[in-house]
Amino acid sequence: MFNSWRELIQIEFAAYNFVTLRKDMLAGLTVAAVALPLALAYGVAAGVDAAAGLVTGIVAGVLVGFLGGAPASVSGPTGGLAAVIAVFAVQFGMQGVWMIGLISGVLLILMGVFRLGRLVTLMPTPAIAGYTSGVAIIIAVSQIDNALGIRTPSAGSAWQKAIQYFQIDISPNWSAVLLTCLVIGIMAIWPRFSIADKIPGSLAAIIIATLVYLGIGFDVPIIGDIPRSILLDNRFGGDEIAWTDLLVYIFPAITVTVLVSIESLLCGALAENQTGRRPNNEVELTAQGIANLIVPFFGGIAASAALSRTAVNLRAKGITRISPIVHGIVLLMIVLVLAPIIGRVPLAALAGVLMMTAWRMNQWSRLRLYFGKRLKHAIIPFLATVLVSVFLSLTQAILIGIVLCIVAFVVQMGAVQSLWKRSDLVESSADNHHYRVNGPIFFGASRKLLDLVEANSPADADIVLSLAESPLLDATGIEMLQELRSRQASGGGSFRLTNLAPRVESMLKRSGSLAGMI
Figure 1 (cartoon, rainbow, N blue to C red):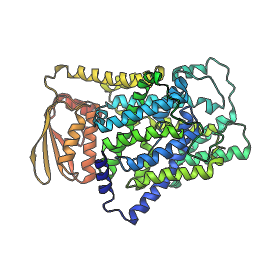
Figure 2: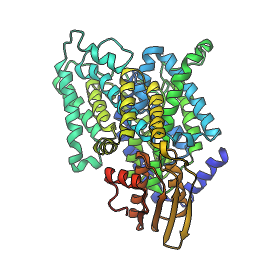
Figure 3: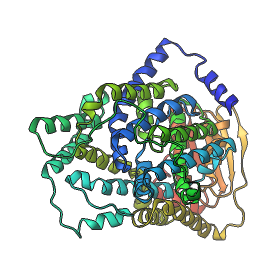
Figure 4: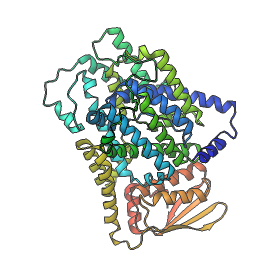
C-alpha cells in the first residue's frame, strides 16, 4: 500500500512548480470558504455540535489530503453521513457515534488492503439516487426545529419526527423563520451574481443573516461557544470502550463504511474525469479509514470525500493534494482566530443552508431520466429506497434498494440465456476503434466495458460499438454510454452504436439518448 501511495506522489509532483503551487493554494482557500458553513451545518445536522463538524473538516481534510489516493478530492463531514450519524446519536449517544466511526475506520482500511473498492462500483445507480434523496429528506426534516426556532423531542426516523409537528402545540419563533427564509432566498439567487465565482452563496448567506441578527437583535438560538482548538473537551478517550457492546455497533458501522466508500470513490471518479489522472481506490479507502480512526480522538464525527467541495476544488484549478491540505489548514486558522464570531451565527441560518443543500443533493437529471422515460426497473428501487430511508432506517434502505435492483435485473434477464462474457476490440487503426459487445450492458458490467474502452481508445478516436449480441441495457448502461459519448465529444473524437437489438434500441429511444449515437 505504501508503494502505491509513493508512486502516486511521484507521478503527481513530477512536474510541480511555483505556478502549480499558486493554483493549489488559491484552490485550497476557495474550498475552505465553501467548507466553513457546510462543516458548521453538518455538525449541527449530525445531532452533535458545530465545533465537531469543524474539527472533522480540519482533521479529515489534512489527513486524507496527505494520504489519499484521489489527490484532488476534498474530505470532511457530508450531508449523507450527518443524516446517518444523527440517527445513531439518538440511539447510542456520542460514545456510540465514536465507536461506530472507529469500527468503520477499521473496515475501510480492510477494504483498502484487500482491494475491495471495486465492489462499491457495482452499486446500482437507482439505489444510490434513492439513498441520496432519502438522506436529503432526512436532513430537511431534521432542520425544521432550527428553522422554527423551537425544540421538539428526538425521534427514531424522519417520519416519526415529521408527524410530531402535527401532534404537539408549536409556537414558531418568527425571527428564526425569517432568517431561514433569508438564507434560502440568498442561496437561490446568488448564482446569478458575478461575485458568486469568488464568494460561495452559503458563506454569503450566513454572513448576511448573522449581520441581520446582530443588527436587529433577534432573540434566536445561536451556535454558542466554539473552542479555539481542534482538541475538543468532548472527545473519545479510548478508556470508554464497552467491549461487550461492540456487536451492537457493527451494522451501523457497515452503513457508515458503505456510505464513505460510495461518496469517496464517486469523488475519485469526478476528479479523474476532470484531471485525467486515475485514482487509486485502495489507497483512498485506506486513507479514509485512517482518518475515521483518528477523528473521534479529536471529538469529530465520521468523514468522507465530499462531492461538492471536490467539484469546487476542481473548478478552482486545484491540481494536487496540496489544495485539500491547504483547505484543512485554513479551516484551522479560522477556528483559532474567528471562533468567537462563528459562535454568534444563528442556528436558523444553518438550517437554511442545510435545507437548500438538501434540495440540491437530489440527482434531478437522473430522476428526470427515470420518471420522464418511465424506466420501471429504476423507478421501483428508487422509490423503495427513499421510502425505507424515511420510514425505517438508512441501513435497511441501502440493502433493500440493492436487492430490488437485482430483482429487477433478474426479471429483465428472464429470456436471456447467456450473461456478460467480454467485449472484444475487433478492429483498430490509429483513429478508428470498433468493439463488439457480447452480453447485456447492465449495472454489473457497465464499468467493465467503460474501463475497457478507456484503456484502449483515446478521447480523440472514432469509436464504434456493435451491440448485435447485446440483448439488454439498463439505466446504468445508458449513463455509461452517455459518458463515453461525452468523453469522445470533448476529446475531439466520435462515438456511435451499430447493430442494435430491438430491446436496446427501444430503451435508448425512450431515454432520449439514441440521437447522436447511431
